[in-house]
Image (tube, rainbow, N blue to C red; front, side, top):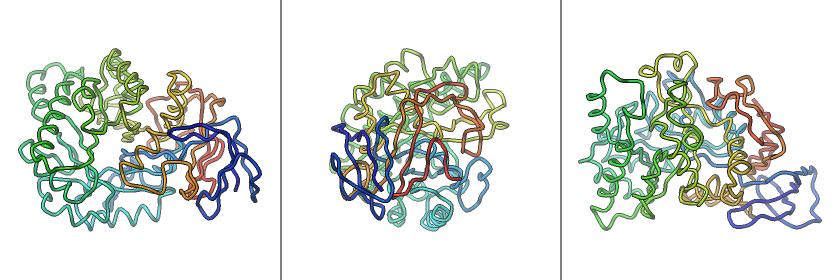
Length: 421
């Protein structure tokens, strides 16, 4: 196969042809390449296959949450959004805290997944001493500093030990930073007013948790570990972490505000949406390269589950289907450099996880390509989504672009905004 068009890497954009054979990129030249099939994408941007560092695909061997999403529907949605590698979080009904559970998840993913599904290992207070046993099954570990499914919550006094245990595996670490004690205090003081979710989980909860991570990570000067602060919701977090940690941001925190969730409980997420000023500052930080990763935090729930009052509605929104549309919005409407997109959506995630075979368009790399058409305006509609929950926080919004083709391991697996499922 030959792909022809504008190639976007982290440090350059140029017009060229890409030769693909046996799932790998075998040549990149200005012209003169020939193949059995040729895809002309001259009006598009050809990115390295997008990598989503943070998704909740919901499936495990219990199958209790398959009605929300499973590996087949989740990876179809990912392809629809231009994603060729997705990393699944451990907080499912049977949390990924042991080798046996992770092996079972990987077997399901191999049978059902349409793209690469890699896994985080959950760190709980019950398995800190044994997490090394599952390091072959995971690409990174996840710590939760607020309560979540499966009892994965780590208390502050245990945090230094948990970080040291992950460091011993030589694997990266992602941390959900919300201080459970701050959240509990706010719930006690705001028992009457449950309408403002951002007040129940305030910015101070995130900032306090980040400070705890800073203290825990520096408590042993020998600790050298790659740490990613998950789904940053307040720009003040960026000032705290400086160059000490990596960090990620979601589409919903760059697009919506707390006023939106007050009008639409479907937008309830953890950590919550913040003010318009905060949104704009986060967006500016992303545009300037201060945020390393753009992640989906894809967390599907059914419409029935999300239709309750704000206090009863589960937190989380689906974002996989619309990832490419959102990237188009960032480029066209926000002036984000395509090279920055290549870094935040492909190169940086690959380097963080140590995936040397992807993340850039180079000879010898796997032929995973996300080809974005910025001339195809799309209005998001539920009937066009592949996620099993069949709704999107962006439903009704029009975006300035969509995925033209997605190439996975050298094969066209999505064409003209249509996934193969």
